[in-house]
Each structure stands twice: as structure tokens, then as C-alpha cells.
Image (cartoon, rainbow, N blue to C red; front, side):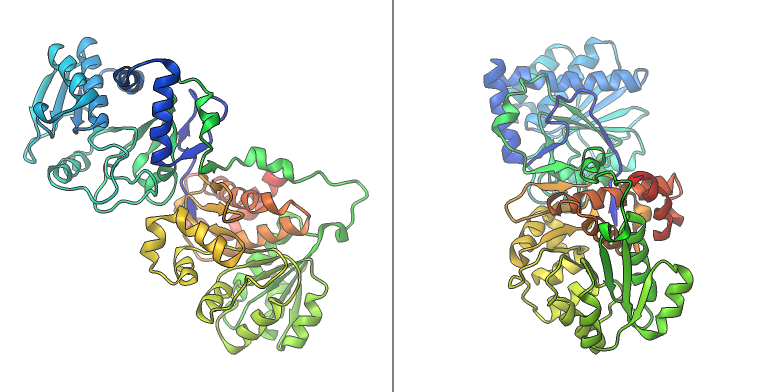
Length: 508
């Protein structure tokens, strides 16, 4: 499943930073560079951040009262600035602080002093307090959080989430790990998140999209040269730019120009998986598509999609003969884990052609500790988090706690291109490459067969000669964008085969 949706408003972005994603250490460096280059103080930068949030509130919630929850760090300082601006504008505003003013330091303390001088109403937080109709500003915890939320901060977040009021988060929702998108125990659920300086990578994967709502990026009018000095650790994938790698077809084309994909899978009871992968390869534009499967599935596949060549394969020798005709292999959809499955996998892995390894191919590789790094031909791994955990011999929870690290580890261990599926799917073409993050998709994709369609799309693109450094990213975006087009507000009833019509439109 891939989900996340197009939840970023980039109206104020400059050229590069609209798609660049950074970790927390990089954002802190950008922050320091911004202060030096613009020759401003930390307080002035804080005031810019507060103004950016306040302008958003004015634009969207002008007639509402505002309640600002403030912590003790710079994030809390932003909150004091927002409250001051609201007071000066004549908006009913209340500030709820979780740290006493005498505990504040640096720019946060100075922001408090300005708010206090402006006459902002400030009260101590209490779990028993009742929130009236208002817009809540979450300025509790910034990017420094690395573990669980503790103490009264937990109570404050619970109060906010139970209020059913609109929440605007400052830089990120309190409780979210900005590097990983992990939520240890509790997190503010915001309708909008105003993100400053650089987009944080954790907002776009794992739990990030569940809690951030719509992400509005504000560069705070920084000089764009600072972004030239800090290369991003990840980048948001854009289908519009990736489609240029799918070249127009010549009028003199014939089927042999666009490759032969062979899907190896479909053990007893799993014919549908191999059929979905094969049809997806066809719909993506592969010249020829075959399925190597059980004899019992031949008539079903041909009846459903006569364009697919279905072959009954019951031995390694039979598969070896068929594989010689292939330009790309998709190994795993419906493969199962029987003796037949293992024979098919071991035979297919010996072929010196690009291969996509999915589903039970990954499970067998993990279970039998098959070493893929001895292979000479390019191959792609497409695990979901549970399969990734098996490949790395860890718990699934460890994969989700740091998906960026996990996808890099798999790329390094297996010398492969890796797509780690899930909310904000991650594409890693090598252990040293910048990670691609797919922000399209929706929760309707959480159904059996979606991964088989994705494998077919990857295979179809590789067969047509799409550059292997861009193929996986393009396939991931096509899959997710097609799912968004197919869902159209009806996510719960979405089927994998519903993607074929919008897929044709996207690649047409």
C-alpha cells in the first residue's frame, strides 16, 4: 500500500526546496545559515515563522478565536509570537503554557516578554480545562523530540485531540519524529502543518501523513543559496518530471521493440496474483507478457486476458527453456512457499536478466538466506514492511521506526534497488543514493493484489527500456497516481484491477 496524498501546498516555495526533504540536523544547519546570510537574529527568524502561521490563520479562519499551546523551546517561542500578533490584530486569543515563564531561555524567553507586554492572556495548563470554540495552535514540541512524549505534554496533546477543534501545527505536529515519521506514544492530529526552512522527511512517510494534514511550506524568505550547500537526504517524487523517461513510440514499432516480461508465480490458489502482475505489465506497454504457472491456472488466465501467454511449468528445466525468451522477470506474485515455489525461484534467479522480486520470492530469500549479492544482473526488491523485516531479520516495528534507514540497509545488503512500500513509499536505487518519497496514493490501496499490479508496472517499464535509475520511481508514481484517479473519494471499495484504466491515461 502507498498512501499520503497530495497534501502539500507549495505556493511559497522556491525552485529547489519544494521537493527537497531534510533531516533535523540539516534543518538546524539551514537555520543557522539563514540567520547568517540574511544578517538577522534568531528572534527575527522566529518572528517570521510566527507571522507565517498567523497569516495562514487570518486567511482561513479569520472570525475564530485562537488558543495557542506553548512549550519551552523555539517551537513554543513561535507560539508566543503568534499570540502576540493575534492580540495586536484584535483577535480573541488565549495562550496556554506548559512551562513557567521563568523556565524559558533565549529567544523563547524574549518572545514571551513581548507577548506579556502586549497583554496576551496567559494561563497554566490543566488537564481539566475546557476548550471553547476556537482554532488551536500547536506550538508544544519542535523537531528535537526523539522518544516518547512525557508528563503534562501527554495530557495537553490528549486534550487537543479530544477537543474536535481545528488544529494548526507549528513546523510539525507535537509528538511526531521529524526524521522518521514515527509516533512513540501520542501525537497532535493537525488539520494543517506550517513547515519552516526545510521540509522534514518524517512528515511524508510512516505516521507523518496521518497527523500532519495539509502541509504548507514557508521558506521564511531565506536566500535560496543556502539550499545549494546542504544536499537533501530525500526528495519528493513528481510523476510529471519522471514521465519524460518514457519515450514516445516510433510509427514503425513492433512488439519485439518493447520487451518480453515473464511472470513466475501462481502456485495453487494464487492464480490471481500472477494474472494481475501480467496484465499490469501489458497495460504499461510491454510488447509481450507470459506467465509461468501451474497447469490448473492456464484456462483461467487465458479466459480473463487472452493477450497473456500462459505456460504450464512443473520443472526447473521447463522454466529455464521459457526464461531464455524473456527480457525481464517478475518473480513472486502468488509464488507460494512450496517445493515447486522454491524450484521456480532458484531457477529464475540464475537468469542473467533484470528481475523484480516480490511477495513470496522475498519471503523465500529471507527464510533460506539466499545470497543475492553474487548476481550480476540488475534486480529490484519490492517489500512491504513485514517482508522488509524478514529480509533484515528484525521486527516489523523496527522497520517502521526508521523506514529511511531500513531501505538503505536493504539496498546495501542485497546490492539491489529497493522499494519499501507503505505510507510514503521509499525508493532507493543504491545504498549511496538520495531516497525518493512517493507522496501520492490513498488508504484504499490497502488490499490484496495492489503489490502485484505494482510489480507488473515495474516489469513493463523495464521491458520497454526505461532507464533503470528512474524506472522504479516512475513505476511507483504511476501506481499511486492511478490509484488516486481510480478512487475519486471511493477509497474503501478500490480494487487493484481498477487501476488499469487510469494507468492507460497516465502513460498515454
